[in-house]
Image: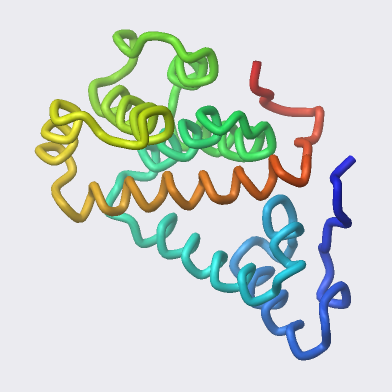
Length: 182
């Protein structure tokens, strides 16, 4: 059970902040769940986070499948089961293979996945583990994605790292009926 009440309805926040809940719901399939059910304890932070997340997910220069590889890498590196649950399914629907997800989930070597996927996972592993990107990884990622792509990739992983912190700190668990982290 989560450590704090999960806010999922506009009536859960002050009346003058209910428009924020409506905006979040409008951009996320008409519902509030996961990190936003925690962040709504600070409606302004929730609204601004949702706006940033929409920009990073839907206006990114990264191909959709690689974006999901990045998100799943952030989820795994932060051991965030809730984030993994939602984005592993989405990754599969966008053409990411189960093998790639297994490599990420089990922290396996990257030689069995595509070069682009391996580059994204390596970038994320270095970012979250070392808090820096090696010169070799940076050069390869810069050549492949360009400056804007690297900014998109870094910000996307940082954003999902922040969401993972919110979910993990308040012990928000994923449903049992889907992809789980080992």
